[in-house]
Image (cartoon, rainbow, N blue to C red; front, side, top):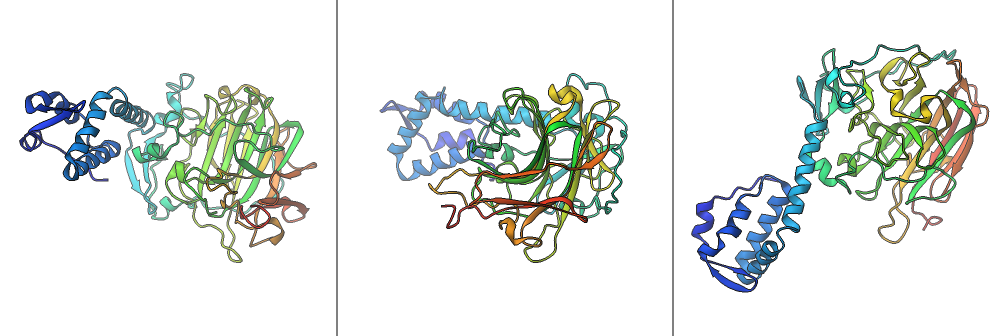
Length: 453
């Protein structure tokens, strides 16, 4: 929205009287009211919209305009100041997470990518990391399976050939509009707190997942099919990810998460985007998406967490997947993230966690959507490709080559993968195993349909 400016001389020249609490006052008595409006920041989208609205009303209905002005003046500690306070919170937060850059890259999808010096990234605002620098690569898990090489150029912003210099990392810039879309400014970049158990529905979150539990896990790996599912409204999302979990599923729940998501609220569009997440207290006060707080330490200068993925899969056409590995460094205990075959993205420091300082007790793979039921019926938000598992390759979304990391830093196949869909008429899942894909499953669905009203 264009900014709107207002000069005092023009405003006073056209104003002879004002109405306060239903009484007309002369021009001199109105200066306090006028000064209040003139001190406001009209560059903000919220304030600018409000002023445009008031001026329009004053043209067609002067008395109505005075009544609105009366409301604003008599309640100046409620509506305007609350909005100004909200904007101050937004700007302070943006100053914290948007770091100075040495290069700026404009992405075709509208994103701005800032190339930030590695040791100045948000993670190093954490008291435990101040004055530190990113760690060197750790020992990787031993894997006897040969994986195909994947390019680092799997995101829209990098297709132009631009990249961030060595010693910097690419960070998707967060804008005022990003924060204004959030259902809660104070919880921007965080998930809504909810239980993680998949055996019941919670807060409208629905899942189709494969999982393992009952042992000690030190990491997980999978190739995740990438699609661009349709999301029905701004406050819903659709994602496909891995969860590395430990804790009691109460207030002490620890999770490390990575995958792709479509989230109009967080990103303002419908592109599938590479994301990470973490929490050490069941999504209450700790953790965030991507680099939106102090936590994940990025080490790669070619991958922007939160940036759009390209290409994506097409129905009955070409298929595209991304391979992700999360594992615990045996030497320092940090949890590392690798993309493709050998491309290190960064790590979650072990001190962020309680239970995950040692090991994980469960690993989950699969899809999740939010069903807000805004129309009174089930959402039409799609999971995966938007088609059921029974349609198979090229039509249903999949996870393949699913493995876990054992105590000796070995990648091993799963011996007890279980699958669960908590709303199987809306989204379902079917598992299998073969010599090419190892452990795999198809999953997803269209949401609202004849069997899912």
